[in-house]
Length: 602
Image (cartoon, rainbow, N blue to C red; front, side, top):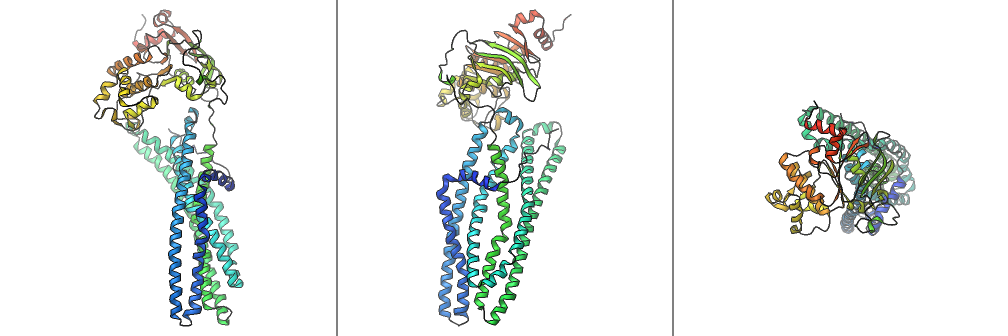
């Protein structure tokens, strides 16, 4: 049963100023676009706020005086203002979208590069679906901050400032009547802000949880169908989707409540204006055109406040997403290249340092994936340059772990792992992984052509003709040639349009191109048919020729020609020697051999 209650880290109170400063670091390279966009705010506000005043002039100076010629001039000016306003708003919308797209492009690039630097333990505890939520959904929320949130809010501030100045200048008593309801607006906005902040965070958390479940379910659909778990999976997905729906409903409720509250207070302000302003019109203290203009300005005063709910949704969603994104960026990988490498392992020649220097060495290694559940316990082994060593033992004894420690996917808790006599923690990571290769039990192929997957091995692989020798050496040339488009054949996700054996042959060809000095093979023939196994074993023989190798195998028939066989038991090397010698000893290896081949003792 998969664990569905594991939430993302619930971060503390949102520190908007701190998050905005961090977002500004991604915005700074586009400061010219931002500056030009901000320069349009005063012009847009000026054109927008001039319109009610033109209405006042049209009523007081022309309509009431029956000056139709003058009214035509005012109408023409009003039309010109509208055209100019629409042009400026269209330009502003284009620039804000452009800025947002560029900022989020940079942020996503930084996120992806950061994820590439994370160690294997990070991916052990981080579901892929949640990481995708960070890059995609949270990235889009931050983009909205620029396109519909922060920029729009800044424009509203400029407009509101202009409205307040004009209303106070026209009639300060009437303006105070309008502003009398502002304290109620502040209280309402504060109340709904506190309620909305937590709801946005809950929505993002539940969305990430549902994405993680969906990604895992789609990848494991064949297993779901095999065990007839469709109904149970639908039920679990329904529970997650329902939780997300309830969270989004709560968020929508607060947004709608704020919108309705502002609308109500705005209508109340209009009623007050009609009552108080109408009295001033009757007494002659205010012109009829002035009252109409005041009503227009009051609408423009409450309009951005009324839309504050939508803007606040964008702002708060972006704030919560920024919390999560920067929380991810603040996670530091535990495995990094050393800051000072002297002497630098990547700078020395690939030739062995000396005959006495082991190619691979583990010294008193202790390792556990969690706590003190030790997989390796005081484990030591040595592999000489050019030697072929096989690791055997029951499942869970740490064979694959040794291969992972060789490429420093994980760091040991105690002891040392040395490659060419240098602790792997002193190697530059890229150099180490160029020097030590690993062919996993399940080779991973990417979407793309066969040639593209082979070229993952190194930049030295040029045109298609240069890939031929590697394919021939790996026994993969025949099946690649038989593909409809050969090396140009498109592979689907994870290479599912190839058989397991074909994927393994391509992995061997890729390793031949990569050409590491030390190679670890993890159960390379464990899941393929006998015919494919024969091809793979022949390809492996060419790959391992003259190369230091550590071969992990459950099929003991595949490693009988190894120079030495090391038997792992309870996290330590218990036996070591050639195949015949270990059989003669009658120990752990002999019992494994008898169990595998059904050779019971009589």
